[in-house]
Length: 161
Image (cartoon, rainbow, N blue to C red; front, side, top):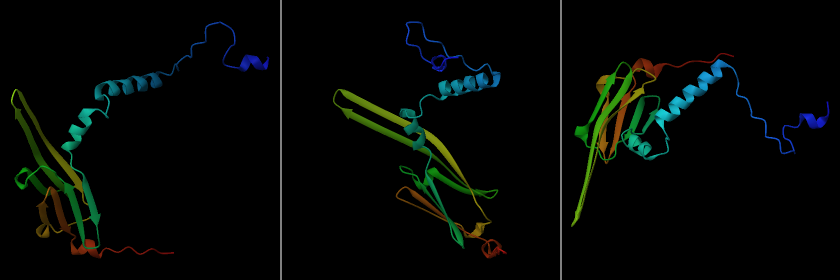
């Protein structure tokens, strides 16, 4: 066998060889499922991405020895639109956003509305004292302070060598 027989391209005018796909049925199934999801979900960088994100608040969680602080950005919402609850060791933040923009300039009338609800769940890494939870909401930022129970704050693990 000559070395030129191993080269995958040819210098002649013959049509190029077509690369065969794998005959593995599982790879074909995976490709079909991937294509189905791509078709269903579309391009995530499109305009819908920004709309979906507008209703899903960003959340920061900070833990210290005595408490857990959760901060959520909820621009455009008011206190009455937000519900905060503690259920099964998780903090739930729920809300509904209703936004309307109306513009009337002579012959041009434009009215845009956006409605949507959201909910975020933050699993708490330790037990908290439900009676001492504090929440505040100012300028679109929700701050929730969850003090740890005495048993949770005393838990110290020693490392043996």
